[in-house]
Structure formats: structure tokens, C-alpha cells
Image (cartoon, rainbow, N blue to C red; front, side, top):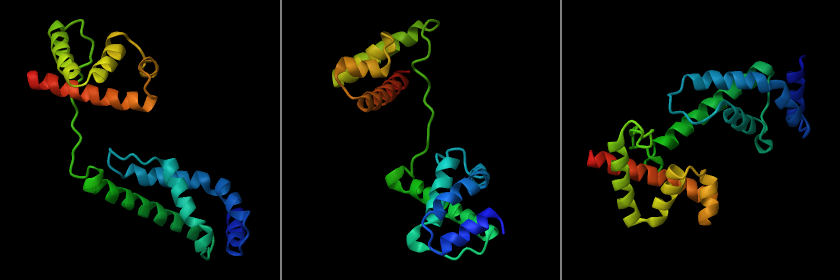
Length: 186
């Protein structure tokens, strides 16, 4: 009997230390299995192999739902099934309207590309920035400090007394707002 089978038998008998000993023994194989499963997913998949392995492992060795393990092959078959269920749950969650299921990703042209060769783009950007400033001066300030003054977003947050997360969120919004404003003008 190999190490994995012995540990699985120990888990069945209720050994609380056995679950911790199992992961190092099966991690590489579970990771390979997760990578294989994810390779069949669409390009927009945000779930990573490591997260998939960890979630499947937690489901497999949950102490409240102890199940009989009939050896190594049964364990890996159960792991594959757990990963499949996690991927299906993830796909269903993403398909819900609450999570943007009806929306499609659209790539916007990069309005913040180098402006040296296109002075008319800089004029469009300035006009959009003036409109943004009329609506929200703080958003316009973030754009000015980050884009024109070359400050990092962390530094912009410190200068404006705003948290790092808020600055990133506001920068993303301001960037999208300006891209839309520039594309409407074009």
C-alpha cells in the first residue's frame, strides 16, 4: 500500500493529522489535474489552478462529511469530480445577471497612448478632461496627477488623502469615462 492510500485510510478512521499529511503527497498531481481542467475553459476564465486545487481539496477532506476512500484512484476520481463541480458553479455564477452575465467585454481604444505623434488626440483628451472636471473635480485631479504629472496611483492617493483602493477604483472609472467621451467626440 502506498503513502497516499495509507493517509486516506487514516482519514477514514478519523485521524485529524492525516488530512494535513495528505496535501503534500497529492498536491502536484492535483495541480496537474486542475491545469488540465482549466485548459479546456474559455479564455476569460479567472479561476486559477491553485485556487481550484485548494477548493477541491477542502471539499474532499471536509471533516463533517467524511467519506470512505477506496484508494488512490478513487480519491483522484473524486478530486476530478469536485473540480468539475467548482468550474460549473463558477460558470453559473458568472452567467447570472447580478455578475454581469448579460454583458460582453468590449475593448476600448487606448486614449492614454503616447501623444507625441498625435497632437489632435491630446486636444481631445484635454476637452474630455475639462468635461470630467465639471462633473467631478477629484476624478479629474487623479487623471492630471497620474497621467500628466507621472505620479504613481499610490502617490496620488497620499497627495489627495484617499485610500489606495479608492484611487484605483476612481482611476479606472475616470479612464473609462474619458475613453467614452473621446470616442463620442470622434
